[in-house]
Image (tube, rainbow, N blue to C red; front, side):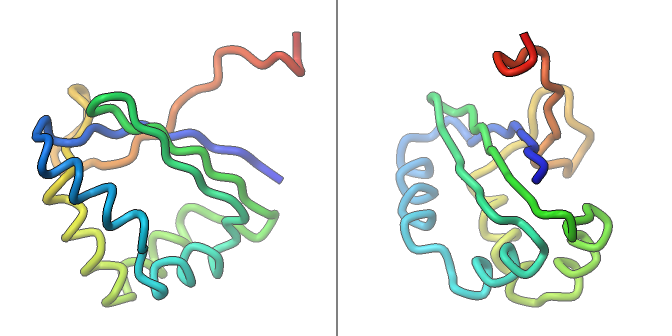
Length: 112
């Protein structure tokens, strides 16, 4: 199992944030299926004001390039991602259109 952590920002708009959270209380089944089919075994998203933090755990079959290719060929995933972009904005140092950014681990109690 591997664990990855990502960061992303939401637009600073209380109504949009409420809508975003409502969508995540009932994520479309096709999105859940695409996540699980890619080898992602667990995923959690946390929010602090507009900052999002996602923890993703994967099995050995997971591959970022395969996931990206599957997502780009899945109409429902593309529709979901376009909808989510209404609420999201890249981190201040992100390239244009770049969404979830992989974070670097700087500490682990298990490794101390």
